[in-house]
Length: 285
Ligand SMILES: Cc1cc2nc3c(=O)[nH]c(=O)nc-3n(C[C@H](O)[C@H](O)[C@H](O)COP(=O)(O)OP(=O)(O)OC[C@H]3O[C@@H](n4cnc5c(N)ncnc54)[C@H](O)[C@@H]3O)c2cc1C
Ligand code: FES
Image (cartoon, rainbow, N blue to C red; front, side, top):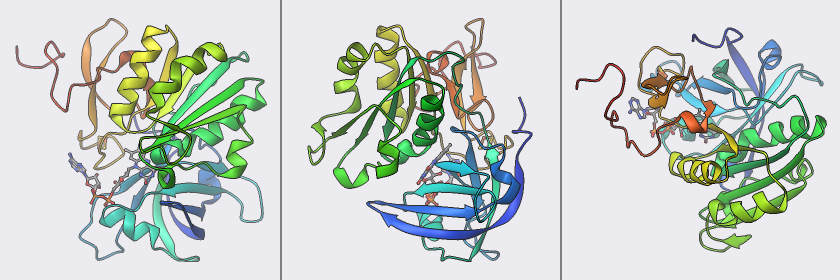
C-alpha cells in the first residue's frame, strides 16, 4: 500500500480554537482537503513555524470533516496539548495558518447493512468516533458508545455528539464521571444488552489490546485505530511499524500510517511492547 492517494498538502487557516475540558477543539478552513476525509483518517501538521527545530509533523485524528458551509471545506481536530508540538498547535489564534497534509491513512469500514455497533474511545481517542457514529446512524445502525479516561476532564464528549448515539456510557478510573473503572469493565454488559455485532475503537494501545481481547472472546469483529508514534506520517521513516498478521497468518511489521491507523484488531499482535515478535517475517531466527 502507498500514501492515501487523496492526500493534499496546504496552508490552512485556523477558523476557531476553543478550550473544551482538557482539550482544544480546533476548526480549519481546508477547501478540497475535506472532500475525501473519512472517519479514521488523520492529518499531519508541521509545528513550530518556519524556523522551528521541530522538523517532524504531528499526527491528529480527524474529528469531523465537512465540505459544505460558509467556509467551504473544514476539518475539526481535538488536540491534547502535552508536548511542545501539540502545545504550539493548541496556541494558534484564529486567522493564523498551519501547514497540513490530509487525509492520511485508512478509514473505518462502514457496513453495507444496518448492524448494532459499539464504539469505544479512550481520552482524545473519541475524536473520530462521533463522525463515524453519524454515518452509522444515517445507515440505520444502532450505535452505542463507551468513552473512558482517567478522570472526567479527559473525556471528550460534546453535547451534539451525544445525540448521534443511542446510549452513551462513560467510565473514569477515579470515578469522577460515569462508572468507576475502565471501558472494558462495562463492555460485556453492553455487548449483551445491545446484541453488538461490530466494535470500533480508538485510543491508547493498551486500551485497544484490552478491547480486542473482549471482542475476540465474544467473537465480534473489531476495527481499531492504532496510535503508534509517527515521525513522518507518510510511509517513509518506518517509526510507526507494528506487528500484524497477513491473510495467511504470517506476522509482518507494517506501517500504521499507511496500512493503518484503522486495522482489523484480530490481525494486530498486541503486547509486543515495541519488540519484533518471534517468527516475524524477515526477522533473524
Ligand atoms: C494516528 C494518530 C492520531 C492521533 N490523534 C490525536 C488526536 O486526535 N489528538 C491528539 O491530541 N493527539 C493525537 N495523536 C497523538 C499526537 O500525534 C501526539 O500527541 C503528538 O505527536 C505529540 O507531539 P508533541 O510535540 O506535543 O509531543 P512530543 O512527545 O514532544 O513529540 C512527539 C514527536 O516525537 C516523535 N516521536 C515520538 N516517538 C518517536 C520515535 N520512536 N521515533 C521517532 N520519532 C518519534 C513524533 O513523531 C512526534 O513528532 C495521534 C497520533 C496518531 C499516530
Ligand atoms: S510514520 Fe513514517 S512510516 Fe509511518
